Length: 114
Length: 114
Image (cartoon, rainbow over all chains, first blue to last red; front, side, top):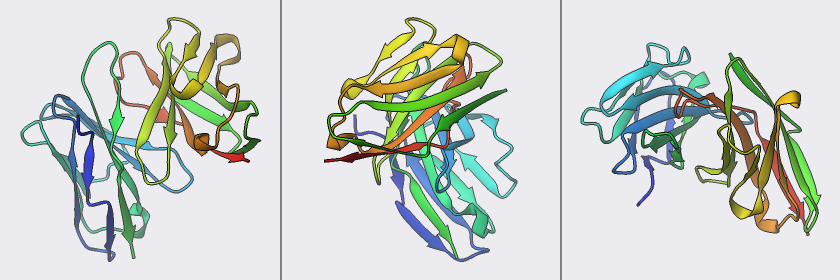
């Protein structure tokens, strides 16, 4: 069990640029979640996948955001035309469905939009 | 609708003293309740989880929490604080059929003085 890994750990970009983050979940986990955390706040749910299917998206996920999990393994989160308000920590978590579902979080990708 | 309120954004205790972090929730369905801890530059780690079984839930690192429906509370306690407990703590709520889609509180930063 190598845990949930996220890449990159930090990303600095200029407003208007596109960015993409990657999340590698724990290998046997079929669910993958994306959360966003801004300074001084708790994480906010963005979207989640069960296998390769994206089952739910938050209203926080504007049309500039897109997430994929093409083979039901790793996932990518892309933000197009970044804005300063997108600056946040983007957290990925994975789990296995079941009565005792438990989330395992990665260390996150810190995005700074200048 | 569900929400979580954590009372106190910062709590400071002396080493060896009681730790009490407060969490009140609102939920239109029977809630699942969680406490997570976040150390600097790390992902969130589950401390404990309430799922409608025993109202007193014991977690890792000596923490426990008590579900009180009449008070809509789920406060986190530890009898004796250790320096290593210094971290950010998050309370979260979900419904029983919502898997890993959690609603987090704003967090409480715990400081431990020697």
